[in-house]
Length: 276
Figure (tube, rainbow, N blue to C red):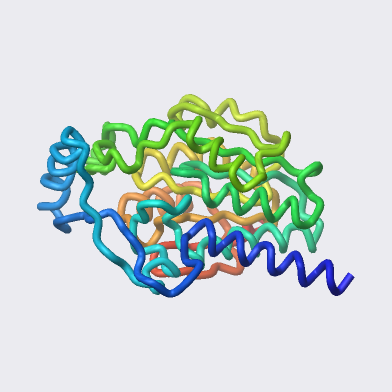
């Protein structure tokens, strides 16, 4: 059993390093954002479109620390959330397994699939993949154009890097040999798909909606399905004002009880659903 445990630890650690491409301490290629702030919101999408029409792409270098903290947009990695947030996914699921907390893993906003791949690998490592489902929910077309006043000026919808097809995400699952029968891909805008998601119990809910409306739609559709002491992971709570406001509004309107809240990194907040 000690060897089995050691192999499990090594497998999951290697999976995290591969998914983030932090397998060594060299500099990593990252998508260049050119400008920050309001000027970047206007100019970055225009620059990216201009370059892509000419089959060009500008990248810069980032460090191992950027990749650890998820502060860059990697060119080749399956996730941009970084090592800390991947470990948070693993540890949240491990806690649910150890404490016999029932329910599935649901991620809303999967990009290239890295966090959900990590979740699937964790379930496989513990022999839980025949007991819990993985639900990877995304438009697989990028983010929607803003319609909510609080999302006004948001540029994510025009960023080509964020548009990853379902086929490409499925290929990433297959590449890591974690595309088992318990993995489900749900394509469509959150407001249309999540209210109909055929899930009864959620052990870990991971939100990566980036915008007010997307975050609000995830919470109003799925929060009540999170089981007591289950985990809610808000990827952009500290890095995206609209996301933070959406959660705070939902929390105040629905008397959300937060237990064991953890600041995962400079962007992500994780807590356990309290029992009311």
